[in-house]
Length: 142
Image (cartoon, rainbow, N blue to C red; front, side, top):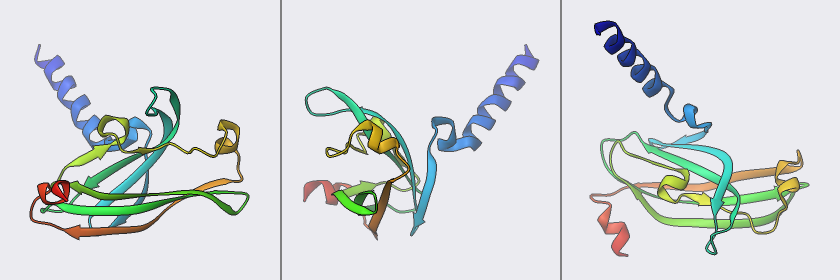
């Protein structure tokens, strides 16, 4: 019995070390203690249809809450074809938001699935602004 408990402990420890990697996320950047990771997956749009989506994972490594905003720029053949802005997001100290679980994803409207998988397609997360706040509820009330 002790052997199984020890093996379970090792498995859980290893899983914790892997972080988002177990979900297939790739770290994109770190700005002021906010880690941003991405992966492509599927998410439901407003009508409930599953579509290709850029899933985003954010981890606040700070000991205080942060508000953040950013732009998503989608390029095809070197030309900006679509963009979007996410604003007034907030994350408590040492917490994370991950993909579809917390509703943080971007569904491209102007691309086919073939284009999204093409080597000529590229996305950029730009103008990531991170700001220390006292409480996340401040942001939600605005």
